[in-house]
Length: 314
Picture 1 (cartoon, rainbow, N blue to C red):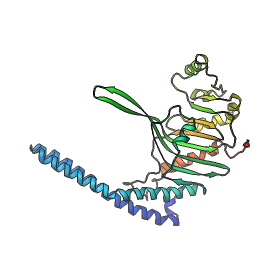
Picture 2 (cartoon, rainbow, N blue to C red; picture 1 turned 60 degrees about the vertical axis):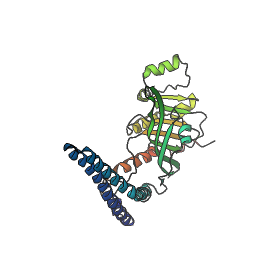
Picture 3 (tube, helix red, strand yellow; picture 1 turned 180 degrees about the vertical axis):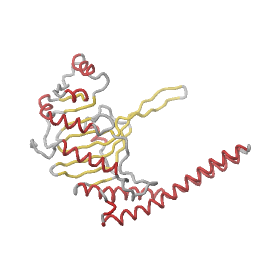
Picture 4 (tube, one colour; picture 1 turned 45 degrees about the vertical axis):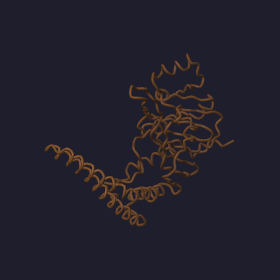
């Protein structure tokens, strides 16, 4: 996608590139100031004048942080403009209905109500909500980082540790059916087949759904409040398509069918839609990862055949 050459975007890219160069120069000067202060400490310390070295280091760090603070507002404006103007144009190019709101995301309530994860977050961050309608299907997705905390008592007092519940993209689409129950497809955890057998036979979990796709059953555990509906939803074709989509994630995806929506959690490590500071916006590959992710999200609608309305809402 050669957005750089589109007449309506040439001036936008040039304007943002000018902002980037200004910001990059000031960042570079700030880091140089900090680096020179550190170098002065090392050199002066060799001659035994440690106090003078520490003073020079402090001066270098102060100057550097002040320079970063002075350019901070312009940096934030540049990054927001990149999302609204460049990523917004990319979305319009892919589908006219798609829009981005960098300051919004998947709400914590929506994250919990999706039933994709059994743990409630203690710390939650979301951004870069993309939303629109692909043919007949309403979709939205955003980056999410949800964490829980544990505390341990040490001789020095209580220590807090943060652990990821999920980091990646939560995708939601209209499934055009009001489900009777909740059906959740999760990664098969520790123990694999033994864990599933233990859950069914020892814990008496009657929510486990037995499916006929061996590869799907090796990868996922499926639970549902309505066994018949779960098999109706998870057709052989849909299971194969979920297995294919799973190959694009950094770890196993999770899927839930609830109310009249399908939620998919894609574990992904990259922070998308971030404007580069030390790489030119005019490079052809500057949007490559963002484009690949966006195509994947649109591919979900195509792969799961969500625009084919085999059901109608009751």
